[in-house]
Amino acid sequence: PEPVPPGEKLEGDDQTANHHKQMGHDFGSAAAAASHATPPPSRGPPGAEASSTSHAVAPAAQAAAPAAPAASAARAAAPAARAAETIASKFLSPAAATFEEGIRSAGGSPTGWDQQEYNGLIWDSSMGERALPPFWEPPAGVDLDSSGSYVNNQPTIFLMVASYRDFQCRDTVSSALSRAAHAFRVAVAVVEQNAYGPGTEDQSCVEPHKPCAQDPEQPLCKYAHQIRLFKVDSKSATGPVFARHVGDRMYRGEYYAMQLDAHVTFIKDWDLLMISQFHETKNDYALLSTYLTDVQGSIDAQGRSKRRTRPIMCNSHFEGGGQTSHLRHLAQPEEVAVMQDTPMLEPFWAAGMSFSRGHFVVRVPYDCCLPMLFQGEEISIGIRAWTFGYDMYAPHTSVIFHEYAVNSARRRGVHAFWENRAAVDAAAGMRRMVGLIKMAPDLSPASYDHKDEFRYGLAPLTPEQERKAGLGSKGPAPGLARPVELFYKLFGMDTRKKTMVPELCKFVKSGKMHEAFSNSLRPNGKGIDYSVHEDFDIKAALDEILTKLSRGAEDLLRAAIAKKKIPALQNSLEMANRAKRVNPKLLAEANALLSELKRV
Image (cartoon, rainbow, N blue to C red; front, side, top):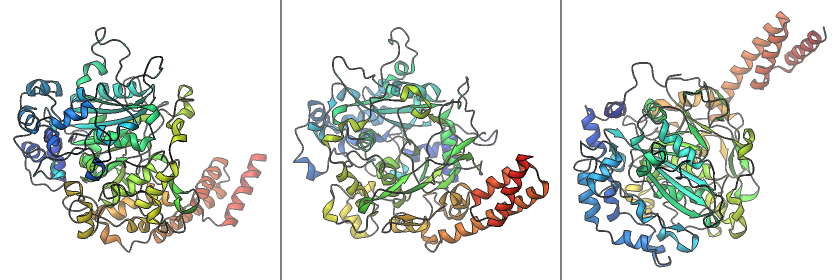
């Protein structure tokens, strides 16, 4: 299905101006929208100013960190004027059509990212945080929500891919660049965790299948200037949280931000399709996120999707024992979306695909200190994001597909970060995760690490918390922070008993969650105001849904019994089983009749 009706798909500045208009921003024109996103004279990526304001580690950690390598020392010594004046004033002038032209006109890195600083670096844990890329911050005086760079009048997309010894990584990057409608706007950030050195079999994420001299049109050659690469020695890899923490540090002020696994395939014009769906939410704080459908049988020869269904995030339960018991997302339902004109609200976030405005990466970066954490990754980011005012949505149209090992022989037996588990205390990361998001109310604060907890924890709610956090522009926009306790209440989770309301998916995938909360979207388009839903009763809402389903199922059962037809009985019994509350005598009658008809 088309993401928007024919004739309504907008491109370039017109699309972005339409988005701001939907958000209630009074810009009036595409040019105004562009100047709002990045005020003059720096219409291009504002990351150029970051070298004078960003920092690699908190001051308390600076003294203890080991000496920075030469690359980091050179970065620290680089004059701020070079970035702030030379690049910001020249990059993406009206005549600059691509990243490449912008680089040539500026004589340097247009975004504040200089790949040459990292080409000779293979990071390992002995180097510490100071050797990692510094976080980006908006230029002084620029509101974070208003930031976002453009290339050739197109809003840019930061695409972050974290890879652990993954032979498909280069194909994922190639797929993104070759199938984007406007590939020149995509900045790819790859965190490559490989085994390096003589005799290694690991395939680089940026090495094309053929030499560039032989075939320069390969995406990894043609768009090489748009790829950021940070190498990590696989022996120092501690899981997806650290890898994506590094990836978030590679963000440099792009308008949109996207996160994906290293073994996915894109469809044609994916960038337009994702942006269109983002606009449909009318929510600048939307996070389009879901588990991805298997690539098998999903894409035709022209690179178009063959699927009409899509997954939605709603199925989770508490896993593990003791105080560190935590929510773990399970297999998610995949159906045709009941709403085709907008993505639907959902309570959970998925790490394998996330698309948002760039400010999300700045406000809710991956935690620095959750080693060997896997199952808690998604709940950590999702709940933190919700407290900062962000809302999760399931796209109605799938544009990226995942290659799962269960259906792919070539992915069985691939390397995994668990190879390094013996050297790391995984339990410590889990204690920190549940402690920071208040999922373990009885856990002693002394039992987990509090390093930079305000940066990697929940949104501050009071002036005192804001003062202690010291997040500045990285904090929640005024009035948008939400208490985490409200999240747990709204979606029926008891963090002390480690239980959650059953059948939550019926509330979500039916569109009832969207209907219940979407009308409370703030007039400025900055998230849903959940303060007006503090008395919402999820159990009552589910009871109403289940009662209606049961009545409908019973009506179908009676009709099928009267018809005495096997297909009708089978269909009605399937629906009755999903409804859960059907009259047991009616069920028994239908089952008995079905058995009799089959015997005959």
